[in-house]
Image 1 (tube, rainbow, N blue to C red):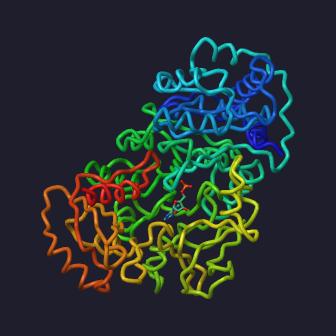
Image 2: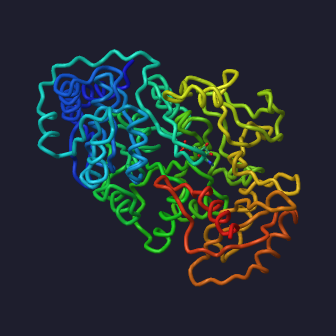
Image 3: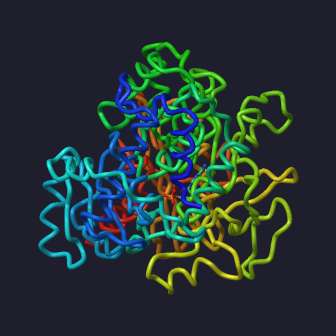
Length: 513
Ligand code: AMP
């Protein structure tokens, strides 16, 4: 079944429901959105000559047309390639070449970056700016095309990994995978009513874009902030305009939301749910978020290869402060979502007992089939029927999974494993520490040594010795950082993830004369 069926269903049952809004105003109801999608899909096939299976790329900041272009591609049987809007021209070029996209849609802010690539990329035939005359022509086509009868395994979304360990890889997310992720949302994450909305404050090329689908299925409103990105003041003002607001945010973005709320005490009536995930949420941070914003949080753990759907920590668990293992649960990523099998495995892919640490493996209908045109990387990651996530963790006796780190972030010092997250959790308890990231630096004798990059709370001072004493009181001596680097901010990507690779590179560069 073509995933655009969700949209068609909403348009026939709730034609007048707001489908997409820009800021405070409705941009299209479901009937209009469906018409526009069908018109554009017909134009893709008839005017642009695209055929089922072709790729259409999106180099777009969040805007209402994001949904129309992406659904139109699916309606016409094409694969969408949503790209992170903050990428460099060379990174766009890489993904456009690798995907073989024939058409790329751009928002005006990205035209200058992407349009010149047409001269150098063999497959790219057109770069079409949203709102341009060419775009309007596509929009005014006759909606004469039937929705393409996609097979479950047809690729719907080529999701490019962030490429921190090499070139980005295109995860082939199928219609079946998206269907399954959508159904799991209702079982494992939250309920949605037709009067609710999602505010796309995070990039729609990532998790927020996946959560468009459960909202479309329920004919709920999709609100795009006027700014096209995350701005806490704007987000809170949208929460007073709209009711039943859900947002998907990275933990680092949740922190920004919380500090704004602490300072400005905004009206929270409209804010229903904040789903957080995509990176570690430290216990001190989620507790502060709950204190300031109330019982509105759900956590998910997923990755492009199993979009948004590996585990979830439910609202009930996050709010059950009287549970004897409340803090452990808060530090976990919750339990396996209903549509996937999740195990913690040894090096032979055999399941380990509770409380033993190993790699997290996943299988189920939400798991993508592999990487686009990359059999070697596919064979490395999909083995013995399991997706190898590259994340390391352990289950407790009740089935709650605690992530330690990505295996590549693990620090091995003097033969002992040190999980940076454990050290980060400790340092964040110090009142002067606002943010921290712990990485390994090559050491001649120990193999690696622990270095902590620390952002201090404004107007706070703390010495290296004080932080060292703080750690010695709380964790084994061998885990404590041997050096503290005080910095103004941590490098993060557009999805709010701390770029540990950059921190490691910095240490390497400074070590070589
Ligand atoms: P991406 O494919 O860009 O969504 O990145 C997926 C990776 O982000 C996972 O493999 C994890 O390492 C990390 N991640 C995702 N969700 C969480 C979470 N809730 N807690 C900690 N790390 C997470």
